[in-house]
Length: 187
Image (cartoon, rainbow, N blue to C red; front, side):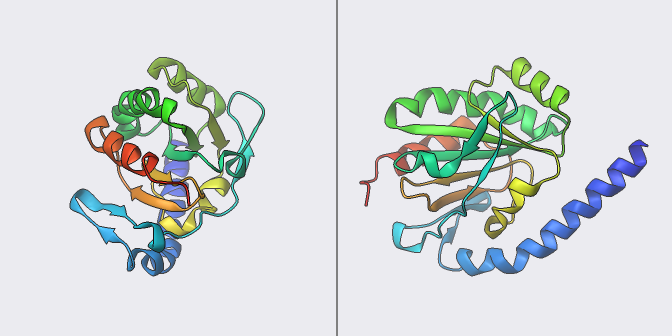
């Protein structure tokens, strides 16, 4: 059974990578890919994020449109993902340090079971909400970013993609990015 699940996940990841390559380049060519594959866009270069909604892991629903006017940090994670476990404390620390600046975080839990995801959040002290996305449908709505797991997007106050990290991150890297985007004037 484990081999079937692994083979299925490999096929999904490969298909997602192929589908994302073409669309990713269209917005990235106008942005800057810096050190460690961090993509940042100036305000005039930023693509709009699609309308994203989903059921929350702990009940209720989330709609990114309700957070317009806030900087939204979107982190794609799974309890099965070692780099996700490594970055969990850094994400929570950045969330706590920036939420007073009208910044919010939302996780997107992908290819996981609800019990494993809930245990992950409890173990790592995650206090921000997560969309439960076992089949990857919500993650696909971000296809412009060629989302992988883990990955983190930072949306500006207008709901545009300001930065993307397609790997795990650390507080020393993430917090300055979030603070810089949070300090921008709302246009």
